[in-house]
Length: 215
Image (cartoon, rainbow, N blue to C red):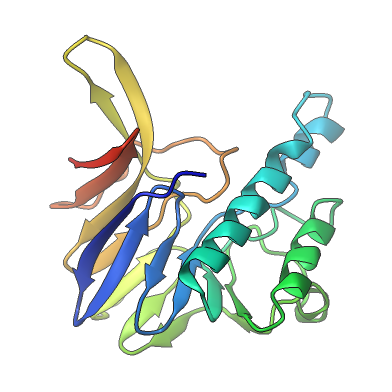
């Protein structure tokens, strides 16, 4: 896995964006991601649509590599960890949390997170919130509707649609940043992209091959 990083200021903090759809908050030693959607591919398979069984395993291998790379002390999942109820991909996540017993795993619930707190604790999630605030930064799966200094959210799987000089059009997942908000790309590679719901005045950070571009 090739890792590309881009540091950006958020309030008085530094966030490191990566090309692996997760960011690292340096001072908190926190790896932050959203929309892992464990079990989504299995849901499609149950409905007769062929999907590779390796999708979730590859996502979790990326997460494992990021934890090691940043020496993360906590992992914050900003919603949609599990696509629906318990499924055969959840034990893969349990194996990851057991492997990293020194890391604290926190979930901010998303609209797809239906496991009970007892079930989440059993798979290694130590803290569960509907909304989390750390040092004035609010973590919420969807954007909050009241004034806060800064919110980190997910949910919409943001992407950008780029026309290159070769007239080739390509779509990329991206981080969406405004002075008061950061929307995370979906960590799962098995998601669609929403290229339309962008806040006014937002800057989109997308990674391509060896670098990063902004829109």
